[in-house]
Image (cartoon, rainbow over all chains, first blue to last red; front, side, top):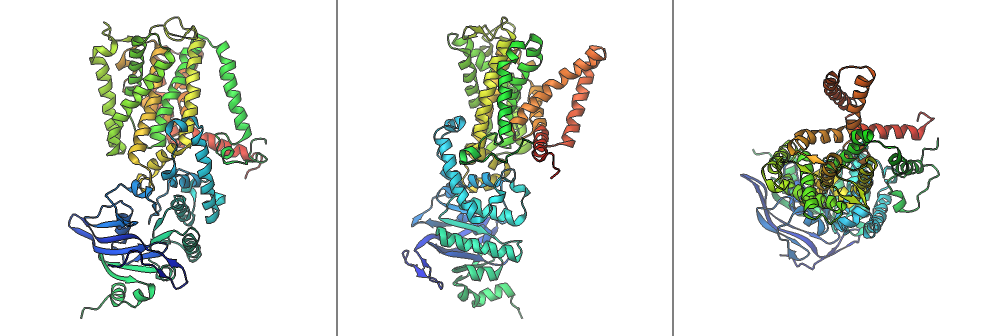
Length: 272
Length: 358
């Protein structure tokens, strides 16, 4: 096993720290179906880690394991050097892990602002009595969090839709608001499930820029699933490749690109 | 012309998140309060108090309560009548058990007791949703009514099985019992409505309100971004039941004075309040008031028109009343499924642009 404190420097000169999260021999079964089979990999402080693979490879299941939505049948999740006990998704969120969803999962009846304020739920401390009176801590807290959320609104350039119910927004903007909601939590680790699915080239470029900026400005560690290989190879520092629930490759984009198993999985192999 | 944000600059986030961001709205709200407190108590008579205003105010509290649960948190409940009964009986037991304490505290205490009962019956919501939850709360409705009929302790072993409110005073003025003046009934209900509507507004615009709405809109995503679903759902049930309990307590002690549980707090009451919430608008405090006004005023209006103006026989008018109110509800739901609150919002949008079309 690798040294936990080991770090490395990326091609563009960013310093990557030690291990933040480590998945050890994760297996996930649904009855007889094995979605993930004995997969181990790590995510380092400050890196952009991609998980790729053909449809049904178990990528989203992996993300669900990390965010606590699925409990692995076997294996351990280590976070910041200690084994994570079994916890509920909202407890995982409190540890500083935020995520977006493959199919947008915004709160459609609420405004952009309210969606993002909900993202800061884990940081809200005022009691129900204070909130009922809208007095003291409740009011102060609301303004403070609003300020933090406004910074993210500026960052994502969505000032104009602040008070629009998100159900009325076009798809690309909804994706952006969802990223904003995850960022509002100021996570240590941000999980992005196909952040660019269904976008056109310009929207993809915008989203890529936001992902890089988030990593750069906020120092957020990012794990993402994406199908667009160009995007993945450009953005990510290291890539895990999955196929049929198994890990078939792990390394820098260049290493992965030249890995024969990966090429076979994507292009298919003739069996004659 | 004067109904718009232009020129009304907000310089702090507190200003920006206030309930009535438009100055005109704010003044209109103060004007309504001034009329409600300063004018109506002096001109109100028994008919207006008993037929219109007092039931409207009490139903508004109950509708806000159900709206918190169903409109904001997305949990359907058919147990409203049962929870109102809990409020009424809790108030009765407190009134007769601690006669030296003010009725105001009895009503609030009844609210808290109902909140506890509501949270208890809210427990199934952690496992089941939608229609199934509605059926589970229906069980609460029937169980509670049965309980208050069967156990004599709840009605202090009275021979009739009814509970009746003894006379209680606030600042030396009778607010319950047969000697209560119309304006006293009205004012005490109005005070509760104003305070509770304000509390409801505060809760729904803050952290708790957002956690409720998050659960309503997408419960899985809510849990993953850090909303504790257990806490969100149970607080929604508790707060909602608190409001409904206070409404039940006022309905019994101030409005009716004597209650037979099966008649007053039966399943019809649950549906009546659910209709108010749906017609008024789910997820809107204003909608709760609008829905309560609609459901209270419509039968009164129809009766006045049919019997008073057209001179039809009372029983025919009473039958027609059912049909017309029913038809109105159906037409309303087809034409504007988001309720009166949505109509109000659209009107405000138009007004903001007026006299320009866009």
